[in-house]
Length: 436
Image (cartoon, rainbow, N blue to C red; front, side, top):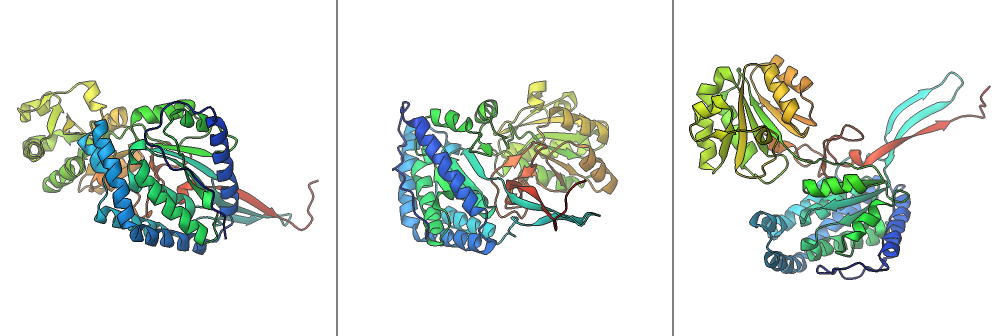
């Protein structure tokens, strides 16, 4: 049975720098290193059983989680958080069930650890295998969404990694209850409890200290606003998996089914506006602009969405306002969308590549050749063909859950699930061979 490391009660209102903070952060990281080394050798079935147990414990602690979340919500309202931020923070019975189901969805994913990616036998008899292994210790810095706490813990454990969770202070009590359930399940399953740890201070200096510990932390994943991501990227001494913004495009091709295009765009923009995979930019082929733009503008207006467009858009949509270059590059996260009319598929591709953020971009078309050209030439992590940008999500794409969405090209791109939290090593087996 694993030994539980005592963790102090979180202090959501803590301010000031603790003189012992560097040593506390060092101890936290070293516990994670030890846990990662142990967890790396745990079979997939035991990790899956642990996640299912954690899901059961979360369901059993419904009342406790709701009570903790109520305290977090009251405090967040007193801090003046926006309505959207409080909505992301708030839990209810259905959302807690979703958190538990998310852990179970990760549990049924194939264990990536130990997968043989390549194998060959050299002329001298050496057997060379390329084998998937965990990254090690993950530092995860994220916004005040309790469900993200559980998703990140699940993805890390399932992929054999230890994780250090630094969430927003607004969700400290809620996150604590969820982490308690995960740690209790690790303990009950004989797995290293310190594979899941919270940073138990609101002191911002803790983040800077941890970002300097490249000897103990293998990768950092920031998930939040652009300011947070840029700070982490600037200060981290270890690799960063990140995306800065989600300026997602929907291109309506000359061969598009316009009714389908309207439905896709409205869902992509309006189903949830304050998320990174919401559409922020509309690109329309000139051949269908007159038929499409006035109709879709009425759809968007019904949701309170303003259009900022070029001259052609403003001519067809009198309520539109003139767009600037900043509009075309903007992640609004709210009721505004940029729009432009283009003369060709290649012009649409050029516009997306110039202003996009390499997150998610969609084409609506009935022409397979146009879809293939767009998918091949647009430089983005995820291309949607005749589907909403809102599907760029680990759960929706079959990963069980995600720890974030990367717009980098090295080491992972797109939603990061269990496989994306692994790397590989070469294992070379011989029978006494020496090199001549």
